[in-house]
Image 1 (cartoon, rainbow, N blue to C red):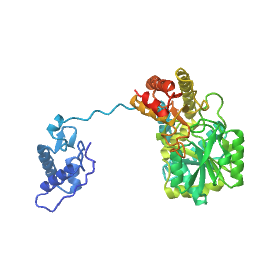
Image 2 (cartoon, helix red, strand yellow):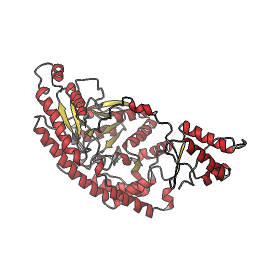
Image 3 (tube, rainbow, N blue to C red):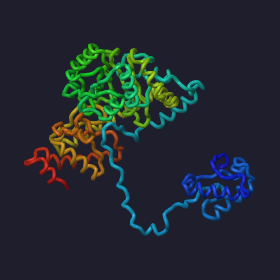
Image 4 (cartoon, rainbow, N blue to C red):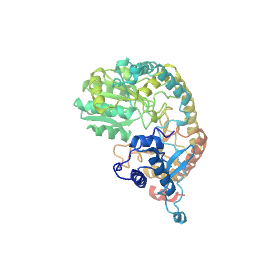
Length: 483
């Protein structure tokens, strides 16, 4: 099993004692950590052939290092590096640090139930894709993605989200963030210098846009979604179907006014449809892209539907941007794995993706309903936002309350996110901005869901009685209710 292993060693082959030189080279490799404890070494016959030495010389060198404790040899297991760089024996008597606390239960937004990833369906699609793929499909492919996946995505988006597109308009990316970065660089190449993003909105997206050389301006979010009166620059990034993080839907009037602004100013709207498949109280709102396909870049991904680690996304791009975006992709070397693309195409065409979405829609709907019901038992403050996606917003009385809940949640084993703590506001230092918890209810595995609910409700119960309507200054009340 070890005969075919490669091993790079530097030693003087011309020396009078090549065996000793080999021993010294191996000792030095182990001492410096280049050969780590447990690493397998090549078989003696293989290493002798690679180094131009007699096999007996290698066998003797191995035997000497085994005797010295540098190597370990066992029948059937080959020769391995011993753990010679461990702490001295008396280190066991030294005080040891406390073991790290257990993993936090995730209540962060934007994370699906990773335990429900369709492993069997994905593995079946991998096998089918590799069985049917031609040699050419594994070569360097088109920078915008394999035709099979682009066609499958175009059909899926038209059927489920009402997107108007053909396969030529689809660009496959390694997730939304990569696609946004490439698109932002393309817009900058076209002369765009400013882009409006929702306030509150994801700080990470603002960082990506700024890295591309764009100035980011705030687009105030109200009950009807992003306010068209704040639109500035030559582009805007929106989450129309389910605004992140407030959970509101972009009102029809706002949609038409934003499209009119884009047409008037030769601007583009980027529609981030990050969880558009998940609507629980009615049929999902159709994609805004269909209202102005020549002005709207539609974007989706598998990060909420399957898992963030899949790293697959798609952008439906208006014709004027396609050539320049393709150039940007080529310059960045931003190609996506052909095997992953073929697998995703198979998952879509065989209906397994649809079946997974329907199954998870039922799961997340039950969880959101249970979350709202349990919170109603401990506070009069209701969740905000439509019944959709994988997160909901719980308004709070103050930034101090938000901070306390996050800190107390960590002590209780819960990972919580707030509007201020996660930088959703363009100016997070302004504590006059609303405070809230952005509760992700999809991530906890089934066995931890009830524990997460109970812990969250216990914390909210404390603040609901002591912080929402404080009798004295917020800071005094905040301090007095700490456990």
